[in-house]
Image (cartoon, one colour):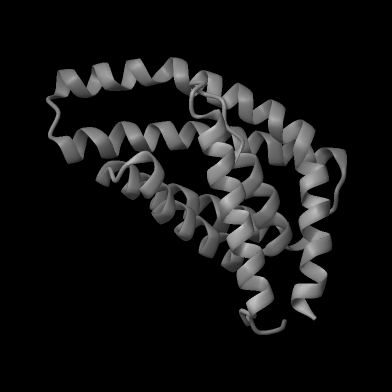
Amino acid sequence: MGTFKTTAKECAFMAVFVALLIASQFILSAIPGIELVTMLFISYSCAMGSKRGMLCATAFSLLRQFIFGALPTVLILYLIYYNLLTFTFGKIGKNLNIKLKNVILIVILACAFTALFTLLDDIITPLYNGYSPKATKLYFYASLPVMSSQVICTAISSACLFVPFFKVFKGVKKPLDY
């Protein structure tokens, strides 16, 4: 196993990927529950590995604060969730063969992680803001419809787009690893 070196070419590619993430989130932000960030992160991390995925996850989590506003709860949620997501899928992707059963597993895990995103928010936001038990319960119930649409969106986008994006990122990885 080679060492992980960050070259200027690799930094530039990661910067473009983070810009793609921010652009996709910005463009789809007007439609509740519709997003492509999860699918982009899982395909990128499976192809490029945990370290690269986590670097991009951290950069994305910090930079998006400039566009959508600096909210401490969102920053905490994003730093925890996206680093956990990219770490997990980076490890899964090490020996991933593109077979139907593996893609189905990826889609199921992506949906589970999408639900986890909302559940983490249902813990972090009430704790940070000091919600009462009743307000915490109401916050949880209010999050379920959006979580449902996010899980459906993740299932569709991962099923349709994971393989092509994984192949593109895998192709880009070869020159970066020289």
